[in-house]
Image (tube, rainbow, N blue to C red):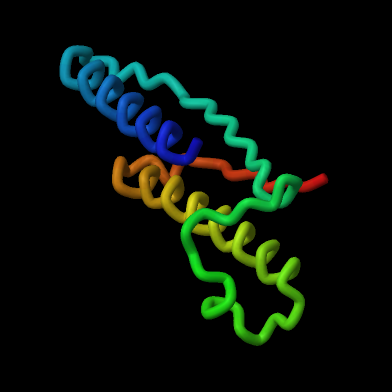
Amino acid sequence: FAHESKRIIEHHAASQKKKTDNDDDNNNNPLFLYLAFQSVHNPYDVPPINVNTTFPSIYSYQRRIYAGMIQMMDDAIRDVVHAFKKQHMWDDTVVIFTSD
């Protein structure tokens, strides 16, 4: 979902630039992006990172898997934030983190 979010951000930025170039009144439309992660819920399935070498200080294998899932979620959030910054949209962005 992070890849799709980045595509949406890039598309929105491009459409806003096109509108700004064509309109004298600089009519910007906001972007609402809702990105929900299931990473910390079952099934615990870590993409190709080696949790045994990445998290050697965590003794429980199940906890290493969980840490790997959190790491993947952090990486995805980092990529989305980077996409906002790359499109010069970060200064006007509100990010809300929630958890259940």
